[in-house]
Length: 171
Image 1 (cartoon, helix red, strand yellow):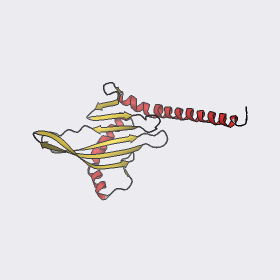
Image 2 (cartoon, rainbow, N blue to C red):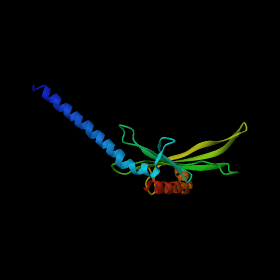
Image 3 (cartoon, rainbow, N blue to C red):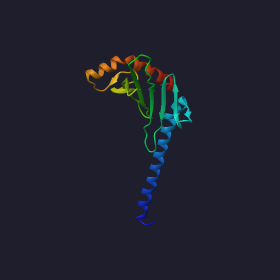
Image 4 (spheres, rainbow, N blue to C red):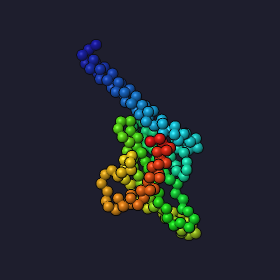
C-alpha cells in the first residue's frame, strides 16, 4: 500500500467507527431512557404514538428523532369549563429526560376564559408563565416578582399535575 493511501484508509476506518459509536449511543439513549415511559403509557394505535388519556390528563411520550438525543414527556390537563364558570387555569408539564445527568422540567401555566361571539361559545387562552423547576417544584432561574406570584398562586395546580405525572411515569 502506498504512503498516501494508508492515511486515507485509517481516516475512513476511524469515520466508520465514529458512525457506529454514534448510532449505538443513540439507540441506547432511546432504549434505556424512553422504554419505561413508553411502557407506562402504551402505544395508542388510533393516534399512532405513545400516549394515554387518564384521569383528565393527556400523557405523551416523544422519543428523540434520529439523529437527536432529546425527546420529551408532556402532561396536559384537559381544559373544560364547569357549568357557570367563566375561567379555568391549566398547568402543563414537559420533561426532557436525559441519559446523562438530571432531567429538565418545564411548566406552563395558562388561563382559559369563556368567550361567546355570534352565538358560539369558545375559550380564549392567556399564557401566564413558562418556567423551569426541579423535582421538588422549586423555581430554577431568575423570574420577576409577578412571575413568582403567578407560580405561587397556582402552586396547588402545579403540585396536582406533578403528582399525576410521578404516578404515571414512575418518576
